[in-house]
Amino acid sequence: MTQTARTVRRTTTVGLTTAVHRNKPLSRAGVLERMFTVAFSGLVYPQIWEDPVVDMEALELRSTDHVVAIASGSCNVLSYLTGDPAKISAIDLNGAHIALGKLKLAALASLTRHEDFLRFFGQAQSKDNVALYDGTIAPRLDSVSRGYWEARSLTGRRRIQAFADNFYRHGLLGRFIGAGHFLGRTLGYDPRVMLKARDMAEQRELFDRHLAPVFDNRFVRWLIRQPASLYGLGIPPAQYKALAADSSEGIKAVLHHRLERLACGFDLKQNYFARQAFGRGYESGPDASLPPYLERRNFEAVRERSNRVGYHQSAITAFLETQPAESCDAYVLLDAQDWMNDADLTALWTQITRTAKPGARVIFRTAADERLLPGRVPAAILDQWSYQEARSRELGERDRSSIYGAFHLYTLARAA
Image 1 (cartoon, rainbow, N blue to C red):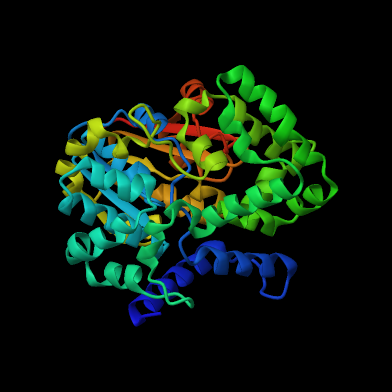
Image 2 (cartoon, rainbow, N blue to C red):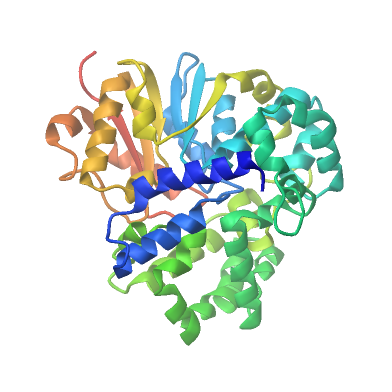
C-alpha cells in the first residue's frame, strides 16, 4: 500500500473514531464500536443506498442553490446535478468515498461518450475500464485520489482493477450482499430467483417461497441478533440498537419487513436497488433502471455541470463551521444522525441553522420509524424549523431503497 493510501485510511479512521466511539475500549459496546471503525475505514458503499429521485422531489432544487450533502458513493451527489443547482459541497469522513467521487468527476471531465461512462460505472466489469483509466482518466485525478486507486492489495492488484470484475461486488456493502447470497444458497434459497419475476404478483410469490423462509432458520436468527452482522450495511452499534427497537418483535421482524418491501414493494424492473441486491449489478438495456447520473438522457447535463461539485473529507458539522452565515440552501444528511449523541446533534443543527438561507430544506433518513430530533435538539433551535410530516411519510413510502424506517424533511420556518 502506498503512503498516500495509508494516509487516506488513517485520516478516515481518526474521523470515524470521533463519530462512533462512545464507550470504554474494553467494554462490550466499546469493542463493537472499534470493530465497526475497522470495518468502515475502507470503501463501504460502491453504490449509495438512498433514492435520489425521492431526494430531489423533497429538495425542489433551484438554479441558485448551494447543496451540502454527505457523499457516500456519490451516485446521489452527481444525480442532483440533473436538478441544476449552482453548487454541491460533498462531505464524507471516509477517504475511499472521496476518492470514488473524484474518480467519477475525472471520468466526466475526460469521457465524451455515454457508452464509456456507463460501461465504467454501470456495468463496471470490463478490462477496457482499466485501460481507459490508465490512458484517459488517471491524468485528470489529484495525487491523493490517484494514489488511492493505484495502491496494491496483498494480492498485488491495483484497486482500480475492481472495475474489471464488477466493482459493485467490492467494498463492505458489496461483500455483505455477496455473503447474503452465499448464505441463502447454502440454505437452499437463491436470492437471484427474484429476477425471474415477470410482474409484482410473481415478486410476492417468489419472495414468500424463496426469501421469507430464511428468517425461520435457527442460525440466521442467531446471526442477525449480533450487531456486527449488519456492519456490512454501514450500521454502527448505536444504529443497530435503534433498528432493533423499531419493532416489538425485534430485529428479525424489522429485517424481514425491509427485505419484503425491497422485493415486493416496487416493480423490480423500475428499481435498481433491488437489482443490486438480488442480481449484484445494474440491468443492461435501453430501458434499464439506473441512478439518474448514469442515464443517457442526463449524461451531457451531468458532464457540463460536474465542475459544480467539490469534495471535502470532513465531518459535516466541522465543514459547516467554515461556511458563512446564510450560505446554504439544502442539506442531505443521509442516516448520519443515527450515529450521533445529543451533543453532536445540537452542534450539527446549530451550524445548519446558522448557515441556512431562508427557505432552506434538510432531508435525512432514520433506521427506526421515529422522529429523531424532538427532545434531543434544544427547542430554541428546532422551533425555527418546520417538520413536513405528511410530505415526509409520502416520500418515505416511495423510497425504492426500502431499507430505512423513515424519511424526514424539515424546512426553515423563521422569517428571513
